Image 1 (cartoon, one colour):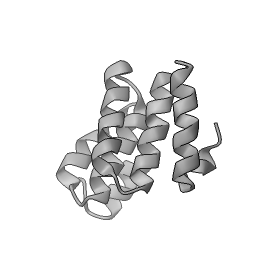
Image 2 (cartoon, one colour):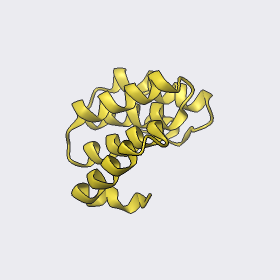
Image 3 (cartoon, helix red, strand yellow):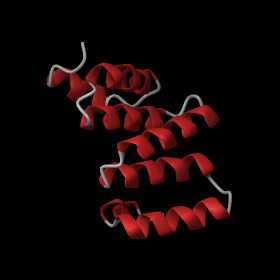
Image 4 (cartoon, one colour):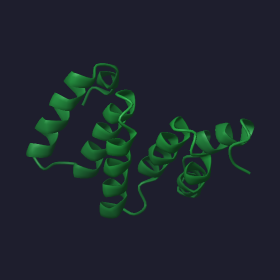
Length: 106
């Protein structure tokens, strides 16, 4: 999957549909589609995809990371902090550190 397609949302969505139809790597596909939705400023749909990925794979650090990021993009810092903190406990801490530097999280 070409991750640079997140900057070409229509191409990214096409790739997601293909991935999803093949039923391989569903969590990764949901994460990818959520990222496409983030780039389209469709945060509601992005959050739905990240949450679905987390339901399927509860320790999916990148999904928690991106979920927190979607909340931060909407200035909903109180909602984003727990997710990036969870991502950090699972091994991805860059967004939490950035959020702390910006004063979003403690």
